[in-house]
Image (cartoon, rainbow, N blue to C red; front, side):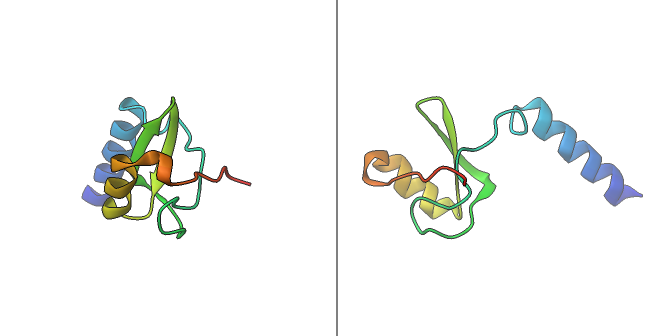
Length: 73
């Protein structure tokens, strides 16, 4: 029961923080080209971009023009 309540609270907090409201433009990490995850994200030109790892996010944030974000197909 505690696990279920924790999951419900976590999902609600994501929605309240806007994570669920803005869908990412990509599903593949622009840095390493693996599947991206919602927990590693940045906003570029008003678009939410997601990454496979925290390291990928850091590399992208340092020089976003170096990487090409491929939209979901």
